[in-house]
Amino acid sequence: MRPPKPRIVPVPEGVFDEDPIPALLSATLPHGDPWSWLLALSLFQADDLARRMMNSSPAGLARLLDEDLSRLRELRSWLQKNHALSDLGCREASEAEWEALEVLERGNAEGLAALFRKHGYAPFSCQTAFTWNGELAVVQTPDPADISVLVGYEKQLKMLLQSVSRLMKGKPAASVLLYGARGTGKSTAVKALRTLFGPQGLRLVEIMPEGLASLSELMNILRGLPQKFVLYIDDLAYDSADRGWRKIKAILDGAVWARPENVMLIATSNRKNIVGESWNERPDPGAEPAAWDSLQEKLALADRFALQLTFPPFDKKLYLRAVARHLGLDELDEAAKAAALRFAIEGHGFSGRTAKQFADSIS
Image (tube, rainbow, N blue to C red; front, side, top):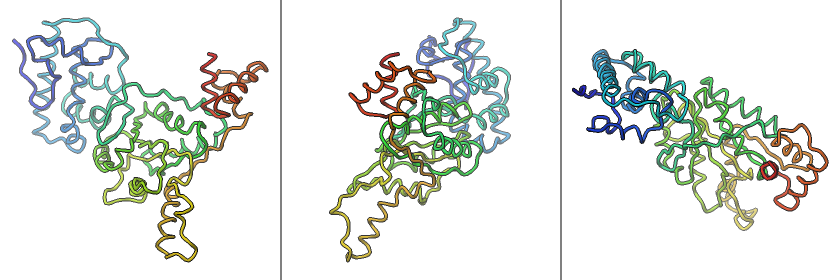
């Protein structure tokens, strides 16, 4: 006889169908017993329950959860007996997943509450990269950016890492603007933060232009979660007719809603004057003060980023260093230098991006 359904903890769709095996096909499971992993990971789907238990665990709720965990164990035993399957996994389990499995196997309501307080709920418990365009989407295959391939900007990268380290320690973290020449590694530096700090709980959320208007909704989603979040705006630039820059100003200067303590903003731009302007938009010397105030408000947007890091253009020497770094060499021989210089001159000039493109072309 099939065990009764849990009353609070959700179970994967299809598990109680006549044939529950299709429920496994839509899940990306770690190596091991598939039914154990499917039910363990379902604990992270209880987002409403998790939000409540991260703050308190009422005695009445604890009794219901103890009963639900017992029902999940009965369900697992029934599935293993009646639909026995070998390993269907395609990856190794994360720390959060192992701890969820421990709760399923031997835990109680307090253990479940501890799991939520440490790892939150899906998708943040096990995923590390997202996009926001008004709705949150998981990046299934994040860029494994490596900060060690960036050369020539050691001081800037050190300051960036120090700021993010403050966030990871629960301290106030400055908003950061990385600006400078194209192809110098600004975006790589930001994406590499996920590679470096993801195992410690950092999550990277790239904000799309259409998502700026609903950032307050995103803040409400992220507020109170145990993870730390970098909100990343790439290639930030506006023309004077685009009012989107005012939304950025609200994030930096403060709005009616408060930015959560576990969130910081990092943007990249090819120019420091983020809001473009033309000469005919400049007020005449005798213009009304309001006209000058409007101009200064546009020019000062970058100043609202507490930390501004400049990435100046590459020269030939720095370009060759970058090529060597991408190839895993201390120094290039004369033939490789000549080939790399020819590639840059005939292509897009000296930059970190060009250095990577050349290294990829001969690897």
